[in-house]
Length: 207
Ligand code: GRF
Image (tube, rainbow, N blue to C red):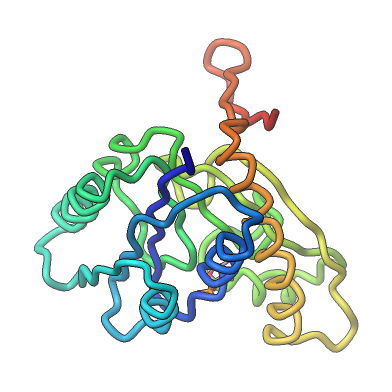
């Protein structure tokens, strides 16, 4: 049975497109049960609709609190029988209400080599710091911001003269490939959590 994914988006949706393309090409044994956006005008919603995937818009501004918004997201995901949640450019921080509804089943793609440069404006931070290598990270969501167990990373060089746009474009190519690669392991039920010693950080193994 293909794994049932729910994809949360806020904007452009190029990572969503990479997933849709891989499914369409038969190289990813997954089904996108629903795409949910908090932004009504997200291009990602158009991409999903063009691929025949059902979409929902749940605007965060319609809810009195982060928890209430997260409860609405969880209800929509449960209704669609989602097994794994993919955050593909979803620009809201999730509360523990959400995280505990899908323990170790929420994947995020971040455009830096975590734990360096968490949060928004990762490319700006990387350029300001002067790192010579950056990249992207696919990780599980925990209750912090970009702190959850790392599943996979890819590096790209930072070149002389790079700006946010050129670095971002170079990283984005790797994001698309890495996210699909990780989802193949999710589909094959190969992404597992191992806890090290008592009180230690949870770690992910693939295989
Ligand atoms: C990507 O750079 C992703 O790493 C970050 O937000 C961006 C989303 O891009 N979390 P897109 O909407 O998938 O094109």
